[in-house]
Amino acid sequence: MSRYLTPSKIGLLALISLYTDSFIPSAATIPILSFIVSYLLPIDPYQDTSLQSSLSLTLPIDSLRQSTIWHPSSIPGRTVWDLLLNYLWKINSFDALHLFFDDLSLLLEKSYEGQDAQELNASSPRRTLLSRSSPLGAFVRRSQLEFTRLQFHDGITLWKSFIVYRGPMIASWRRRYPGVSASIDMNLQEESNSLEESVRDVVYGDLDSLSLKDANISTGDLEHLLEFQVDQMQSVTVPSLLHYVEFLDAWRAGDYLTSFDNLHRYFDYTMHHKDRIFYQYALLNLALLQADFGCLSEAVVAMQEAISTARENNDMGCLNYSLSWLYHCGKEHPEEMAEIQRKGVLGTEREALAFLKAKAKEFNMWSLLSTTLLSEARLSLSNGENLTLAFENITKASHLNIVKDVVNAIGSQIAMQSSLFSRLGNCKLLRGAERVYYAESTQV
Image 1: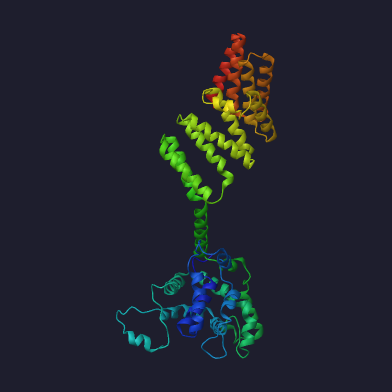
Image 2 (image 1 turned 90 degrees about the vertical axis):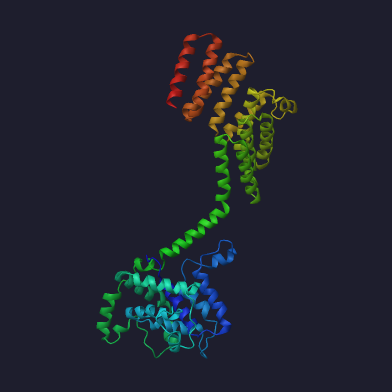
């Protein structure tokens, strides 16, 4: 793969040469220059999507033909495509390719060190010279420099790929110029037919190889494509994620105001892009943030809104987590949940646990199911109910933790077993459970 030069760039250079030689009339100047610049400058990520889709990583010769065939040239009876086709087939040897790149310096304005400007322009008074700092001038200078840097093998690869590139237009060339030979290499024309074919097979027998196909794309083209893709991702993803990462960093550092501000920025950006399906997670994060900084009343209000939004969007994962958090928050801080219990948002504790257990089974949320079973066991102990029901729920949770590998719930399960054995007054089993809990916690 070439670093910069490709056969399509040779076609653009030939088209630029026709422009500087005043073969393109004024009426066709703007369309032709716009076509050239569209392939030289990086793709604008903010332009129309239809215009982006019309551009490709490479410039097929058929696209070059479609963009020039409808524009008449300054020569009567000839279109710009006719002159461009003639120009491309004049490059009929590797030596001619060298001369083509050597003559590119004549398209540029000269530096006047040691030279007379009048002498430079006297040989071609009609030629329009390109400024060295213009997009076309910079492209010509870069192309000439890259060609001089090519190793011999890379130069041969470029020449062969150029032969393949213009190959589909050989029929048009012969039809337009019937009296001119259209050999791929002028050095083979003077040989006999059999010898010419054998030499052509030796020199140009690998024109369909994969290396020549790879030569149609340069690393510079890939860099432009990657830059465009990065711009596209940054315009949609990175700014919002940046706010969220800053929110997490500030939360970890204990900076309430900064974390609160970045959380609002993140979800304001999300809502701006009509991503309302994630709005419940904004409320969920807000509730967790408020609870972590001791603002329990604000956390409960935010969690209630998260539950309502999750139900509206049918997000059962967020809904189950929010209900579970609200239930456990009520157990730890009953004074903050008095209003919710009065309004009956969660119903009774038994109803809330039954709902969480059913939804956890339905959506295979094994960690939530294990936690709910342990909560039912704790509720049975606190209400003074039959211990058999508590043992049953703990056993179910233990089985679920082992079968589904719910590692994060094993500690809670062993702690609940210790509470149960303490209630029964069985000190030996209590100490055994405590040792198991200690060993499990040290491994984690």
